[in-house]
Length: 158
Image (cartoon, rainbow, N blue to C red):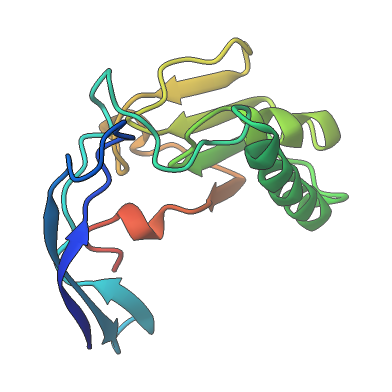
């Protein structure tokens, strides 16, 4: 186990030092699922209107777009030659990746589930501003489901 007594908790960016608060931080290896986890994750309210992304999602900066483009490239290579109708992205952050996939592997509908995401300007992208699992997608069938950079935000990834 890795443990520190105090580690700063992300609350946005402050102009002056020592304005935030700290919490105890513990990492442990969960042998059941072969994953290093934080044992006491602080709940972040991603659905709050004034939530500020810890890391900017693709579509919001040159660096974030570069990462998004690498994910799009990997996904479209994986889907090459496959016909997909419906995709699901869990923890989208933005519609950037779904739009990029559609350019190379057109789909009928992409459903993006993310409590911090509000809407998309693209008609074949449906945004569900909620946490996963969401009752809005119960009994829905998807040809492709993906999630990028979300496990670190999940209290119980198992």
